[in-house]
Image (tube, rainbow, N blue to C red; front, side):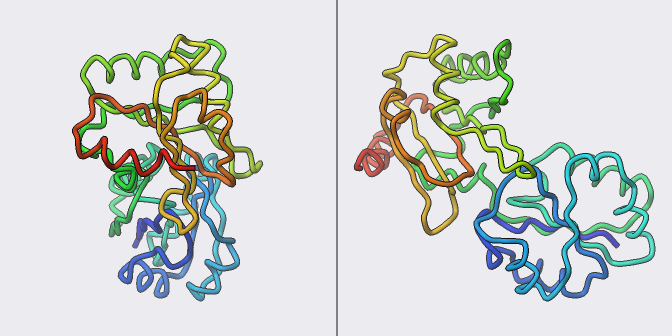
Length: 243
């Protein structure tokens, strides 16, 4: 049996009651450790869950059959930061399990894709989501996605590259550098976000030039350039203009 369990965006208590119940009855607990960053330690997760956690990096999840092999005769919980299906590798794991006839139960949770609604921007008015990678010198995809969304009056969510294993997280100021170098006006208004879903989240609505000077504290981060705004969205964004 394979349980795919989203554990939310913040800390050990963000897991759902159903997810916690399944974790406690599982024989093996794996935690993917490459798509985001929680605001708590692995030790806190283990204490709250009452289980030992096995860290699974991207290479392990994509190339190893250990999780699936154990799922044939044991109960295995695969914990995902945010929601279960926010990353392609998790969908791939789901499909591989299906092909092998392994029973699967999915427990969803909050992800950045829906939690971003706290900004006041209407979630259904977001266009295609794009990521800005560390090595972006000759990368045009994020810009092309932004242009397409802008043309259709849609908001653009930029996810910023990260490598939790090396504690390396792209900061908002570097994402802004990329955008400006690729032709985005530095006086474009955008929303900079850090630690969405936590008690100490930071949301700022300013020009790219101003956001670049803002201290957002610890990761994870994301950046939004809004499209055409409804008057309710405009009112909500005023909340985040304050220092």
